Length: 467
Ligand code: C2O
Ligand code: CU
Image (cartoon, rainbow, N blue to C red; front, side, top):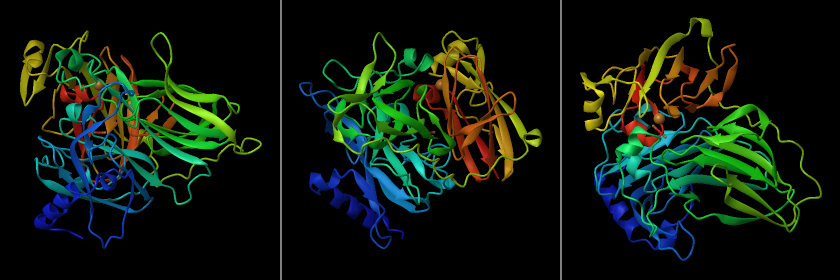
């Protein structure tokens, strides 16, 4: 059901005067489609992201909080949200990782114009895949996401796995001042040309490290989402044992033991774990790196859920992602990543004009894909619908990059032809080459970029066209 602009403004005005309790609801399910579409409003808010005793932080959030509301639907359902922009700058909503129609993808400069302050846009699409997805702006994301604009989009399996709890952990990395305000050092050349905006305060769901009461042998599904601008999280768990069941929303063919938990910006990891720490003890999710591990969440064991652990969980049901065609006859293209500090890049093309590195730096462009910095006029490739595509990502820089393709999940293809799990974001380490393959079954213009948001802004983006 479409609603007119006049009705929409009336609706959003009404939302603004609702009591806080109504706005602050954290779970929304798709209402009766005959009812007025729900809104999702980007606006300023204030919240305690640091421990008690520190001041509250002024943030930007969907419906005024970081994270915004959890949007949760059944596989195959429709998601409809009237996005209202109450910020002072243009914005949009991108539905990260979910395979939807191109004109709902939310990419300013490719699939839509920015939604201006005070304006609104209806996003309305059907979700084909179950799993852990998320949403965020795709305009000045390096600032808007650093200020707190993001939320979870959870699509439930027709028959969800048998777990006692299902927890969503959106892990963010904030750069705060001494008084817990958001550090306004946006666009700093040092960040844009190096590893991006790395913060000094990590939160889960916009809160400081918290305790969660659990029980011995209780089974938890943990949905870990890296919503940070640029930090790669290396995580670990203790007192919890189990398996990884999905990556970037897509189920693994076989669950695998939890080993290296490296989660690059935008990536997700779904775990199914059992509490094995003893009653009275505790488990933890922690972050590695630095002199010592940093605890992000504590699982305090109070009582027993069952006398013994449940049996190993089966794989989640596969989503209807098309299988790759013959790789030998796939259309192939190379994507060369260049630039950044300590890189060799001498020049790149911007808006059709060749510039040397000094001139590039003067306009905040430090990175290039196939010799072009910023959005190229022509796509990296034009694919016919249904074709199998292989892209060789060659990282000739001194930094790791989290390469994200919109609209598709791909598999990394090993030198021996082995196919990796379905993903939407590939961590490509410095000087590493990763080859990916996917079926271009969804028509439209799809962005392909580094999800380290300062790198996107500083040149690392391109697009593909599927006809
Ligand atoms: Cu999370 Cu271009 O997106
Ligand atoms: Cu990058």
